[in-house]
Image (cartoon, rainbow over all chains, first blue to last red; front, side, top):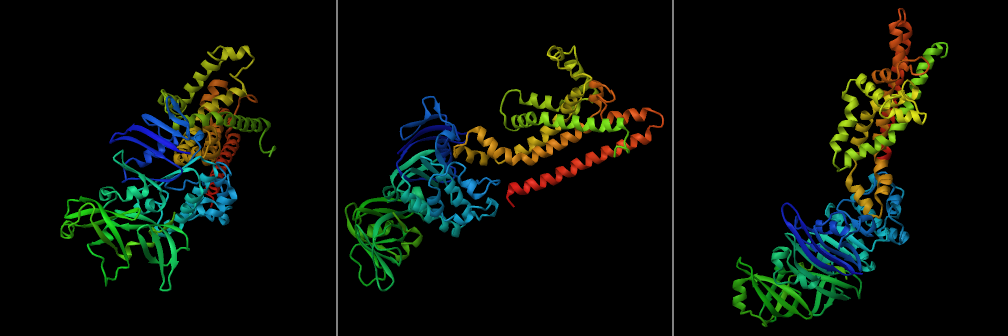
Amino acid sequence: MTLSVQLRHQFSSFDLDVSFEVPAGITGLFGRSGAGKTSVIRAVAGLLRPTAGHIVLGGRVLFGDGVNVPPYLRRIGYVFQEPRLFPHLSVRQNLTYGGRVDFDQVVEMLGIGALLSRRPAHLSGGEAQRVALGRALMSGAEMLLLDEPLAALDAPRKAEILPYLETLRDHAKIPMIYVSHAVDEVARLARNIVVLDAGRVIRSGPARDVMSDVSATAIFGKREAGAILLGEIAAHETDGLTRVNTSAGPIFVPHQGHIGAQIVIRIHAQDVMLSGKQPTEISALNILPVIVIDIQPEGDANVMVQLQAGADRLLARITTRSCAALGLMQGSPCFAILKSVAVAQTDIGPQ
Amino acid sequence: MTDWLTPEEWQAVALSLRVSLWATAVSLPLGIWVAYLLARGDFWGRQALNGLVHLPLILPPVVTGYVLLLTFGRKGVVGQYLDMIGVVLAFKWTGAVLAAAVMAFPLMVRAIRLSIEAVDVRLEEASSTLGASPGRVFITVTLPLIVPGIIAGAILAFAKAMGEFGATITFVANIAGQTQTLPSAIYTLLQVPGGDGQAMRLVWVSIAVALSALVLSEVLARYLAQRIKGK
């Protein structure tokens, strides 16, 4: 099932004009605060009536051509930033409010079996958000909208819920839109990314393409810009490191996962150094042979270098001077040195 | 207790209770509906409806009573048609119910409206995304959350109906055993030389009923608020 969105809406401060497709799996809708992300998914849910456009889910027209299906007939689940649980109902009654599809499986997957008889007032923020997620899943929705479901939680609570979202992504066969302004969440969860800026779609496509776009700094910011590599855990070595095979070569990360697991490794552009020759006698463990694809000046004495690393792409943010000294240009072969800190544990998730 | 009050006085107390209960019960569904319209409605004439509902609160009660008489009297605009189908309100206890209901309506609507305005609209949104039709949203989310407000409004309306005097005496007069409510009986007794003692007893009854209603409302509202919050 696919969702196709094409809509225009006028606000007092800006105009929204977007068009994109959402296939099965998680699509990250990324953008700064005020870019129009929430308005887009409210329109998809039917909570906001756009000025014009078409919203079609699996061939079923939800909006457009004179049709405006009310929210309760759209069969689209919505997990809000706040849990929005019904205070007068128990957790069990909240969960089954919209249906009881896969009740036992969902309860088990989210680990909320012990909470069923409680009232929402007695749940922690993380527990409440898990119940809200379960409630949306049990309604038997044909699509799920997640509107910054982690934004109101502190870091430990986020860490508590992210694995559930990953499990959900790997098991649910419906399209999901995950709205966020946190790059690490989107990089970790989304297979596809739509980037929104001032009411317009400025990038969209598979996560690995969008994350490794040469203009990533403009989209994600200096600190967050960085490509993702797909890999498979190959071995746990005796010195505590785990070897991950990628299309560009082996990468060593701190011990984790089980052998054979598919993982995503995010490598921040500012954590990649380039060398013209294969470096030896260096403390960095992860060195990949790469080829320069593109170089984009960033206007602050730095350039963003896009690199081909096997079947994947990497980004390296280096000074203009270093770039000139190395004589880099399109097609130059060189070596990318990944500082080991670049492979942050939180950025590794099963694919 | 029957020794303590004369049969006529007892009759007045019983009539007042009956009139107030009916007035509250009959106007409650309408009160909830109007409160919902005023709190959430977005329609032409909302302010006019608001004014109309509040009119009995600001008009002299005798004026309201007279308007009721002109409207629902046997020759009134509406009354003449009601008369044809055998419904007579003027000078009947049912008329006292109408007068009490009209006078208490603004208080009831205000209390319920406040509680509806306090309901988190985001919960209703969540409900609709879970497949609940507007009717189901109202019954399963909005209504349970405003029950304390409904109870408060109902008890306030009941207390107001118990004390209603001006509109009642104008519309249905003061006929012992038929339309003589508690306040009318007190008023009558005060017109009779030496009636103070009897009047005093009814005053105590009035105070007792009013205070009981107030305490009941407080206790119920607190209990329900706790239940809703699930604490």
